[in-house]
Image 1 (tube, one colour):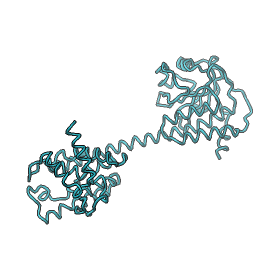
Image 2: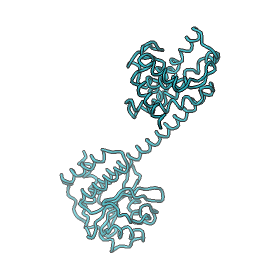
Image 3: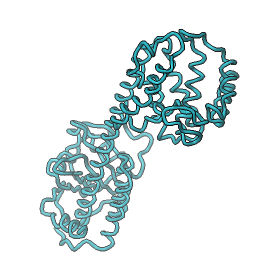
Length: 395
């Protein structure tokens, strides 16, 4: 199928535009060697969606396939063109005015793009060039040049420019056919890479918006209890740092932060009379309070974006010895992120003033954390936490 498609592209020589008259050579079928070269370029282009890598592969592949001296890709940007990739590499003193330029200053490129057809100039010394075109040809030492528009679904996204240096070259109809095939491959790859880039940018913006919303939720929760203001953000920062040091994959760290920020979101459902009670809770009140992890899970599991951040809100009250809640998990059955956060959460709570007690000193709180290793907390997490706190004190 690829061979038929390439051959069909090659047979469309009747629409070739010429800066000077194009020799009328009879087009033979594309050779196996040419086809193999096209497939090689196509496979290389398929390996990446990075727009800059796509363009560099494209120009290098074009030079190899057509056995020419140089190639460049200019991308369309409204009334301007932007240099995307070249081979060989540009000299350090290549003028900035030729890297981004007005389309109107490059009439040969305009003609090729307007007709959506290759335009061939056998010898740039024999045709009238604009000052910008002359500048580029001189800077690159180009003698013969072919402008091949990059067209995808009727839209011109850029132009592939192929050239010879210090010598003239008579492009054959086969060369034009190959350039058509190359430009079609390149156009599709550039469009796909751009779409991917735009999708990534949109996803990043969406994630940023979500995270800003989560921070707002977290702040609203803390505003409900002024005594804990600042606790969540402090705990989230340390949780991410420690989770990373204990082996949580980098890709999962954003979920650790989100879970830490929302660790008490289930308390939205807890009555103020219980949540703000200045003294110890009764047994009946503890039954209500211990429901807040379940409320958190019910809420967050309904939101696809937050479904992987549930571990900390749901499990951070579990204990290493299995006497915690809501599931009574023990040891390493408790998710690592929750084991990490439980140590941080308790330490921060102990060192903060509460209506029913004064804040503990750093020494008192660390002694309690050390004492609870293997009981309430994962011993390995406690060891890492104590080391982190020692490092903080000495810095």
